[in-house]
Figure: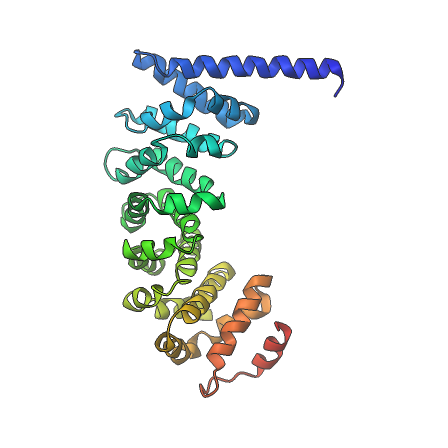
Length: 326
């Protein structure tokens, strides 16, 4: 970039900076219409202009946007939530350092079935998912039990829009990536709704996301009792039955969940897995042969458990598959 282009770019950024400051200043106006217009413009700019996002955050927009999530205006809630989602792509620290931001997101999610419009719910859940990309934020967000509870209720509610369920599942997955959050999720009753969703919902994308969360939560000692209570082993085995026609991603998630469950649980759950293995063997072999690199490795480990020393489940394919994945 030559000097002329550099100066031109500098002038362009200065214009964008002044625009951001002006719009954010209007968010504090006593006029509801002025605030609403500014919110609408900020949403559009933050969506279409990547380089304006940090400028909007630097101008102090986040506290106003968080406060607007408590608004009674659906349009304002939707615009504020969408803008926060856009800012979370490149200005995560600005969001997380804003006092009350997580409380505002929680409030919007807690009222998903009453006063918060679906579009705002979806943006708030997606914002959490975006923030959870950062490892150090997972423990902070996961410690907010009200957020975990609100996301669980959205997944549990049969009247929740599919998009709200999907975005909530993605947020729950991000929370479950931090091991110490998993017991909290179990305590707050997330396991039963997840399995209920897997059983009753035929939409592949939602079942894929639900099984991904199930696989993560299974990686803690407290999961065994909750999964047994929910009939989880049977559900996971059914997903691996080739007759169900589930996707490879669902099968890989089921394999990961069963492996985590046996690894962290006791002999009882290991025995239950081996006893039910007959219907699932072909599905596990399918993952071992055609899954992702990680999926193949986990399937091979699960095959060793299924085979067991005295289980009686023996397949001529086992030896070659186990040798390939060692």
